[in-house]
Amino acid sequence: MKNLPGVTRARKKDGTVYYRSSITIQSKHISLGSFDSANKAGQAYREASQIIRDRKYQLDDYSDSFALDFTKFVILLNFRNSGIYFKTPIYLQSGFFYYYLSPDHFLIFDREDLFFYANHKLQTRGGYYFICDYGSQYNILSRYGIKNYARKGIDYIFVNQNEYDFRYENIKVINEYMGVSKISREGQVLYECVIHIRGNYLIGRYQDKHIAAVAYNKAVDLLAANGIDKKYIKNYIHAYSPAQYHQIYEKISIPDKIRDYTQK
Image (tube, rainbow, N blue to C red; front, top):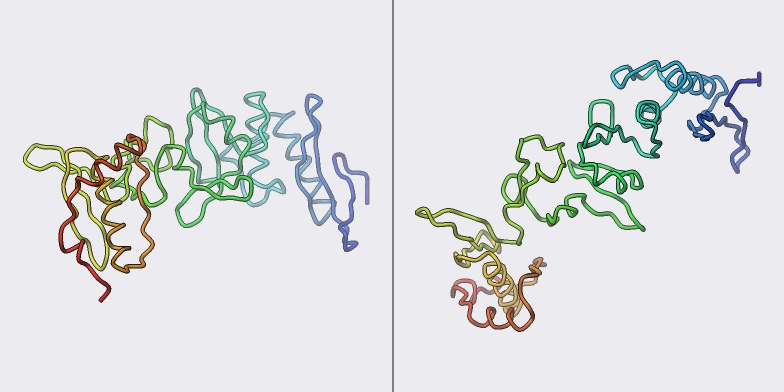
């Protein structure tokens, strides 16, 4: 192998040879990735050098011809422009930042989330964005108090209609409880409680969303007592103490069609 700057030769456990590429900027050693050839590793080093030292390239300049993967490309551009190094593909703006998933797909977050996303890799699957942490996966919407069962456009909305904008001011929670929806009837705001068995069954309409959430839980309990083995997610009502919850639970009346429902 000819002497290429930033390139070192290494072997995998099975003896396969590969090449590591890295660059040192301002006493910081930055890995650029592993490659199957010395030429690709050397190309990655040259691209990184052009980004940092020659101040060449902007985000829109990335293409498949680069040896650097897109994540490294974003990291280096941000480091060059902000002076701050992150291990994740964050690009800082004034008051917010972009987290890039691909050249044409990025999410927007508030600066107060910077430390979190600088230390957690964001992933996407089936339109959901999630973080893997200590062996578990969780939806990033949970950071906004939005449950996994929540429905976009019904239980929560993006205020500016940009569903890639996850700044706190842009996410509005409408319905925080399972089975509960905020409605307007004759100018009055109510909370409609519905449970799905084989079709939707109306439990009731209430003036308080917490009471509606308790009603949903009671309906679940009655169905379970009748042998309905569907796995419903019950609500955790943080607004009540156990004594208050029990008092409200006992007072709530559940319609006979739900109370008497049996497996058919």
